[in-house]
Image (cartoon, rainbow, N blue to C red; front, side):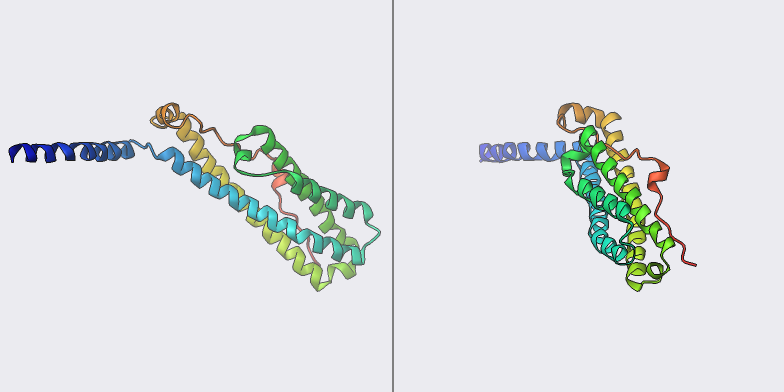
Length: 204
């Protein structure tokens, strides 16, 4: 009977030891890297959602402006082309760890933002367009989306800062060199302040 008890006691040692090791590792921050990575990816998804929202609004805005200012062909064309380029850039989880892909993505989105700003500014020269309820609604939605983009981008930048710092500082740097060798630093936005500005149109 004593041998049986000893065997049972021995059988409990392995899972007990494994549980203690797991708790110890958790306390040492072994889960911080994957946790912060998932958070950053979630923030990135929100950035993409807001950029997609802006992209979806553009066709209706272009058609509305065209109805009042068809002669502004260059501006209309530039928006259409910029939107096509922006949507052509493939974005997925790998984009945020690939410097070149990320650079292409933000450059395309920045160009679309500038073209969109020029399109909205066209309304100043066309009183009927400025007073169009459809245009006013779309312009308001565009500005609201630009604000959401700015917030989503800010949250993403903060999340990436936490994740990248975790990879470079102790104890994260230890876990990165052992359990998480495949984890790479994420890219973040480096666009100018001018590119971050929300297109604004004052209606007098």
